[in-house]
Image 1 (cartoon, rainbow, N blue to C red):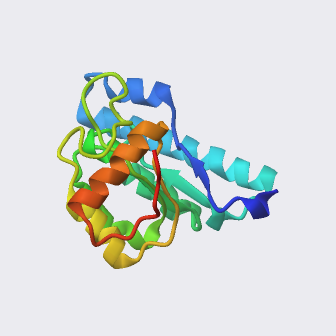
Image 2 (image 1 turned 90 degrees about the vertical axis):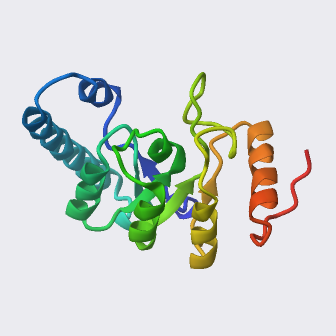
Length: 183
């Protein structure tokens, strides 16, 4: 069964960590606890790898509501897993105060999957059609196109929003070849 799956995406932490990071506590204490959560994530992922015998190179750690430096630390210490860039999580500030374009330029070699969506305030904030939220950077699309990114690019969206996103790409970056999709 594993042979049929290109990449297993893991979230290194959960809702409890996200809630904790919202608390107003001194920066040094927060960093200390982030380090503890990072250690737990490394231990948990190591256990998953050991028990399932999944090849580490088939695992990607998604940037979520957790400092991006911690996500990179997890990947580095596990020696093998890759990064899953979730554009909306970066645009929404879930992974800290980082720039999507700079992060992409610095980490595309480490990236094995991209979750492509916009961030917009409201209902399903981190799952918006491209062009509906926080000024989705067209440069991101151009970077992954010029790099000739070969990993999966996934719209975590219902069909209507995915279709709207494809139309956005065709309009804003017509040089990017896309499959024909009919509504």
